Image (cartoon, rainbow, N blue to C red; front, side, top):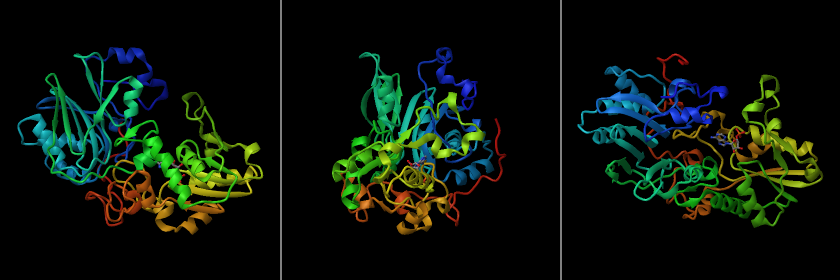
Length: 434
Ligand code: AMP
């Protein structure tokens, strides 16, 4: 068990070789999840751990459970004592209280009660269990590493995690598939009724790293194709195509190649902001975007520019970057967004604000253009996004992805959502316990 504080930059476990070397055992699980339910406090840091009847049980979870508060109320009523405000802990209590006999059956029983998105890796006294929710909203891949006959199995959200440690990609875990890895080998179970998969479309737009393969597709190639679709749908006369770093870069390359307008780095990102040795203190925090990005004035001055970003959430980034281009002498600033307007909050693990804070929830495209003060603004259509993914570009007839952030069509029940479209809060807990 790690005892240092992962939120303290001076106390970072994984930078310290001796910390890692002291850890006993031959298996591990970990997570870098940001919280989408519960606060970002120490008590919610994963893996969450419990001693169950079957032995130790550690769980890591990518996604978000959309009925966790409802389940939690019921569990608490029947005596469960929660240690965190994380939705993930609900799964532990459901496993602990299940009346099934074997651990595997208890886990399956628990998962059949939760709604929403989950890719899980659990370390148990009886082996490692990996699982992807029936719709496959969040990704999960399997890799292997080590000499033939003594190979380790690795489960991770993204293939890039396998690349980094030098492991070989084996395959993706299928939606609704549960994998058990133990001394006897690897066993696959499919405990859920078959569903048409709805993997998250935003993984391809922003969430996944461009060097990952998600659902069998290179994220980088998809993003370039998204940029090309954007250029076909929303052309504009301009001198330069400029990415908003880094999230807009692959789409900007695709836009430039399709339109024939030169791709240039008109915004330079500081190498140093974000590193622990130059953390902006409160005094300089107001510099905000400017501290991280600066206009390449020598390039921009006197030019008509097309800015490409992957998405607009609150509109803060676009507003500041349009202003930055004008200050650097751009004669026209056109904004092109490599996804449809984000009109709805995500309840499946992408950290988007409440709906009323989303710029597109209450404004049409012209009103958004006025808000960010661009000369023109256009978004990729939902059908264009599906086409870029190589799928039927008639989304209404055949929604193959979870695209709720763009369409409001949530593929699972949202039991915890209240009548105002917000996820209910936990009333009984103190703000933070460390
Ligand atoms: P905003 O400034 O609020 O409009 O946010 C838009 C910027 O945030 C874009 O540059 C996106 O690349 C980035 N972005 C989009 N979604 C997320 C997210 N869930 N978490 C953090 N950044 C995001």
